[in-house]
Each structure stands twice: as C-alpha cells, then as structure tokens.
Amino acid sequence: MAEIATIARPYAEALFKACTAGAGVDMGAATAWVDELAAIAANPQLRQLSDNPRINSDQVFDVITGVARSALPDMARNFLRTVIENGRLQALPEVAVQFRALVNRRSGSSDAIVYSAFPTDSAALAELGAALEKRFGRKLNLTVQQDESLIGGIRVVVGDEVLDTSVKARLEQMKAALTA
Image (spheres, helix red, strand yellow):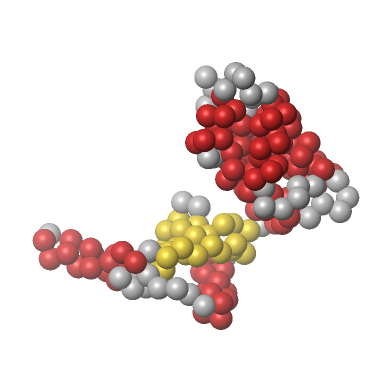
C-alpha cells in the first residue's frame, strides 16, 4: 500500500486549490473544518465502522456529519463525500496536516506548539507570541499544551526547530555537564 502522505497529497492540494479559487472562502474556517474532520476520522471506532463491508459510504458520511460540532459548508461536505467514496478516510488526518502546511506557506506563517508547565493567560501568551515571532522571524500560530513534567519554563516547537527553556532541560544539561 502507498504511504499515507503520498495518498493525502493530491487531496490536500486539490482542496487548497478549491479554497483559493473560490471567492469568499475563509482559509481559517476551512482549516478549522478540515482539522475537525481529521480528528473525527482518526477515531478508531469510526475506522472500524468504515471498514465494515455492511456499511455503505452514505452511512459513514452521515455518521461523520452527525458527529461534527458545527454544520459543515457545502465544500466540506463535497470534500468529505469524495474522500469516503474513494476509500481514503484513513488519510484524512494527513490531508489536514498537508493542507495546513499549504495554508501556512501561503500566509508566510508556521504552526508553533508551546508546552508550558503551568496554565498561560492570554496577556502572557500574546507577549510570548510577539517575542517568539521576533525570535523565529515569521508569524506563528500558537497552540498551548500544558506539560507538568517541564517543572517550569516553556518548550516551543516550530516545525523541526525546538526552543527549550524549561527547568527540566536545564537540569538535564547540568546533569550531563556533571557526569562528563
């Protein structure tokens, strides 16, 4: 079987072209519904249901649209129907990743995950976002995840770049220096 990334690429590119060619398509909204559909498609129970030979593509479509938190626009419904009918539901999470990369490339931004030992309020996050954008030299779409194992500080992942200022990382550096 072909690699999932290879299967997902044409779907992500076609969706991106449809979104950029269509007048009035909000890329932020499109990214949101693609991410939502990907999260639903990643559910193992849904995959098991879609692999059942007694269940047809219309039933899988109805289940997914029924689980979606909001009403999907026509473009999303058509895209989902195409993915299901072509038997590519398992590739939908990767389609979302590649679609987001295309949107980011177009806007000149990157996704960044900020791991913090403690909850971060919106004012501190805005200040941190400005400092990180200056540090990385591009606009960042921040996502915050709490990770208590860091003890203190933050760890930022932007693509394949990592900025780790956590207490845990500093302790590990001290340990390595002392045992060397």
